[in-house]
Image (tube, rainbow, N blue to C red; front, side, top):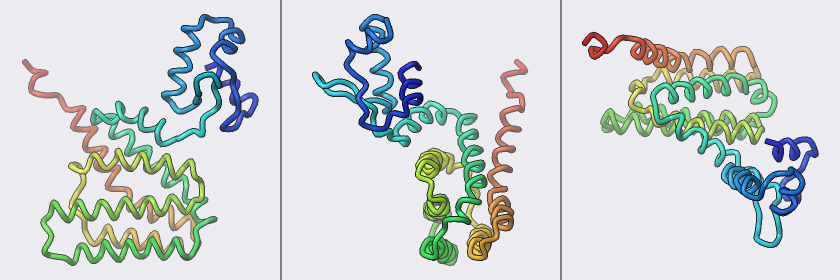
Length: 231
């Protein structure tokens, strides 16, 4: 914690030299084993890096790597997966003002292209339900990634990409795709083209409503007593 506070307080950028284990041992007045443990933890989180006989420095900071380590245990249970899904919704809706401000015509065209591809998938009556769901969800992820990339905020984009990766693990909970879902994507794109922030948020909220319903259903299921509880 003290090493992290020092990085923040001194505004140390990636590559800034922190010193050797010996120097940190002296600076913090603790044993070498304590410093080595702290350094090992911070290396694992991607906060610092180091080379033998050279010393330690501030790492580039791979937010995706850090988030994966945090979210892996979180998503091993249904409750954790629900929280990831809820966080995804909060980030998407909260990023819309920045998307409206920064989105380019090229990015709008890309969103439209994905919507058109989803429409074609639903018109393909040769696909089994399972394959249709898989392909449609892939396009859905592309749509929402492209939407968040338009915010032009690298931290938000990386954070969202990791959340979506783990959100996809709940594909068994997803309903079969419908033309209504495609129409909702289209409504989001149309509102973005008009640079209408309130309407974009309204349309995206309507599109994400099934996620809320799905999460509420799962929560009710968790709250219901099992047969075992009556034994």
